[in-house]
Length: 198
Image 1: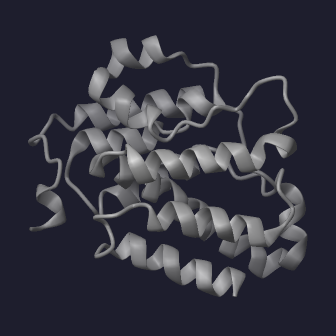
Image 2: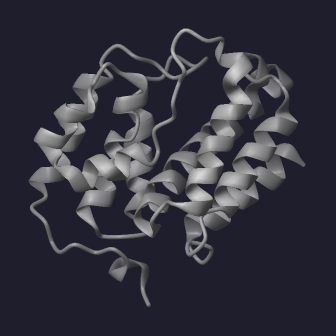
């Protein structure tokens, strides 16, 4: 079975993707990625491009564009529900971490990551896994690029400074994406993990 047929909901109007990109760009306006000053919107756009290598499902690709708006902006779920519908809200929610506002993010890092791993392993649909895998590959590509410039100083920019813990998280969440092992995105994730963490 081709990946294009998995979770495919039909040739939805490409206006959905346009609206998702515009919404995400506005929601993330002024935000930059950790350490490099790159506009934040570059990350979800890359995630969407990765998702498009796995499926033609416009909802999955739109969710990849929007995957950080609940976690990293003040956008509320009801706004996504009204603007994009329940299906896209559900796809985004599966890749949204409980940040535990008011608590030290360094102290909650491992708990938050374990919750993501557990969700992907036990409850995520294949379509949700596509969004998760797209996000993680975009992150891994960024880390690989930055590590080539900064070396071990890279880890200081994160709430978790131990690269072994980052390896644990990425390897665990990627391998939890069962059903996507034959995709180029999965293979690239594993290649970067091996190369970056040894």
